[in-house]
Figure 1 (cartoon, helix red, strand yellow):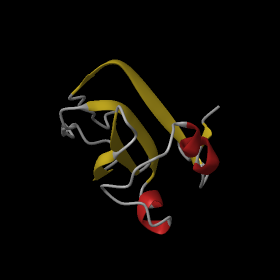
Figure 2 (cartoon, rainbow, N blue to C red):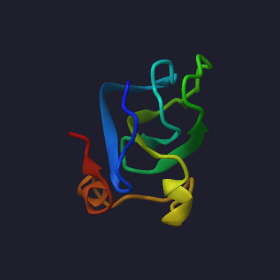
Figure 3 (cartoon, helix red, strand yellow):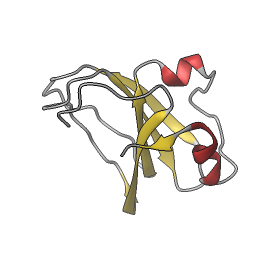
Figure 4 (cartoon, rainbow, N blue to C red):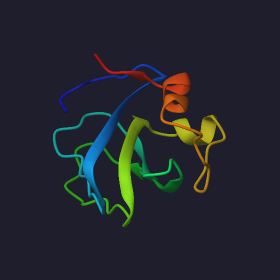
Length: 100
């Protein structure tokens, strides 16, 4: 929140203690983001492009353990789509560094 920019390969990985449906919104977020909802076994279940400043609730999907927010369009530019299976969460580190 409140960031004015994010580097091309930076992102924020949310790790939830419980598998479930986790919803997001963009209030106080100044840059457009994409979010992937990821299952416990590393499968991308849904990707959503989100609008900055929106109070719309972006609904996750049941069975989500992780959510990964990156610059809007990052998944498309890297040819990563719904159904992609990550071998392990270390795979994410190959593509996305943490936001400092």
